[in-house]
Amino acid sequence: MTFIAIQTMDGAESSVAVWGAVVFGLAVASTIGVLLLPRLGAQSSSLRRTVLAAGITAMVITGVAITASSAAVMLEPLQLGVMVVLFLFGASLGVILEFSLARSLSRDLHRLGSAARQIAGGDYAARAELDRLDEIGEAGRVIDRMAVELQAMERERADAQTSRQAFLAAVGHDLRTPLAALRAAAEALEDGLAPEPDRYYAAMRHDLDALTGLVDDLFLLARIEGGALQFRRVTVDLSELTDEAVEAISPVARLKDVRIRLDTSGHVYTSGGPAQLSRTLRNLLDNAIRHTPPGSEVVVEVRDQDGPLVCVIDRGPGFPAEMRDREFEGYVRGSAPAGRTAGGTGLGLTISKRLIEAHAGRIWIEPGPGATVCFQLPPRRPGNGSS
Image 1: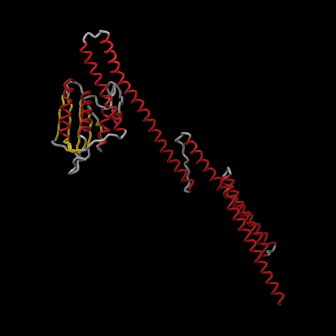
Image 2 (image 1 turned 90 degrees about the vertical axis):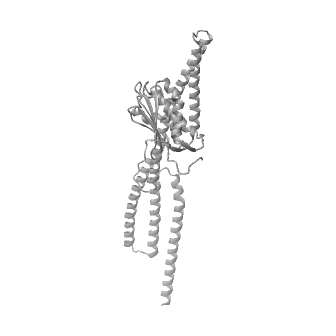
Image 3 (image 1 turned 90 degrees about the horizontal axis):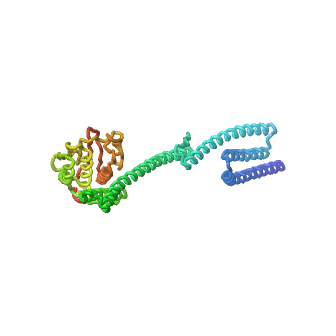
């Protein structure tokens, strides 16, 4: 009995030792796999091969564990055979599932990389369009959103480039015309070919005034666009300011046989820069007078309607419907001869829009007949004086 007990104890101790060795070996193998597989996977050129390698490694470790366990517990050959068959079946199924997963990941990552390369090459219409909810799908959605934003930015850049080219061409035209006239008049005076020198001098002064006005407009627009425009806000009676603008521009209107009528509902107060608002009013009045037929009338309405509102109405050809939203871009040219902007509008409307926006207001063009340009400023807050 004592011998049998000692033999049983020796068998138990041997079994524990075998199990300890098996567990230790599995721990070592698993640790090596965890440490090496990510490094090897990072160096691999195929995600599919990396996933398959990880799966096969796990199955090999599992197989070794089953074999060692079977030896430790001294299974019967039949039991060991059944276990091996089950292991091979599970391993085969695992390989199939891992291959399917690896192929799906590889395909979607390829689409992701292809879209990223196309976008980097300037094809902003490329999209990954991944139908996934995991991190790869999120990366695809981020790339698609980036492509949409880049596409919009590219359109804006192209539009800005086109507008800039048209702007420079129009400015060059408006500079070249008076400069050519000045050169011709100066040469005629130098050569003594001017029959009436006083008329030549008057024409030269007119061309110089036009050049000065254009340069001043360009300088002011550059300050506005550069954010350098600063003005002191004070309480302004918009009706009185409009009356002063009408008086100042009346001589120009009389030369064109155009009447100006001011229609106001009394005092309309706002907070803003008097010089900037006066410049806006004169720009709108000058634009209306230039396009109003002789013998007709320009009406200026000043109201307090949910805030100070000013409308300048003329009987000219009006603004083409397709160009109405672009008239404030500067040097927009419409369809001559019916288009109001035939020959170029200059910078008056552009500057007016920027000045009104600097007052947190808005300016717009209403449909005809004729032309109606309105701007509205925010209501003046009680006690809002200078700032």
